[in-house]
Image (cartoon, rainbow, N blue to C red):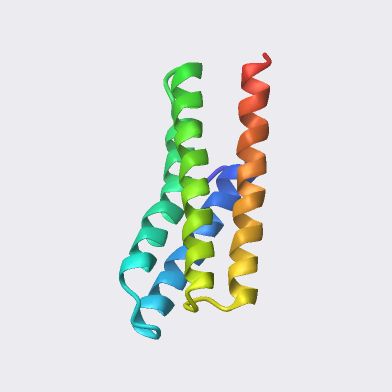
Length: 117
């Protein structure tokens, strides 16, 4: 991973945290359905960022970035649902929600820059 690419680094770190949270939810809390959804969407953010970076055109880059944004929105939903159903503590959920919101802001800013250039 190239140093200095903030969204690439943050989305990767978030994916690592998501995998670890999934392991906790499935092994300790015995929750398999919602946590699997969280795992899928939470790791997909970074995967789509990586695809965007390797995009063959500006349009391809923007399309993959848009998918990453949608996956971050979905992840935000699953975290809220896991919190509100008692599978995540308020503090853990808030930490993940803060990270998701930061990722959304960064992706949104990149999208805005592309649209305006």
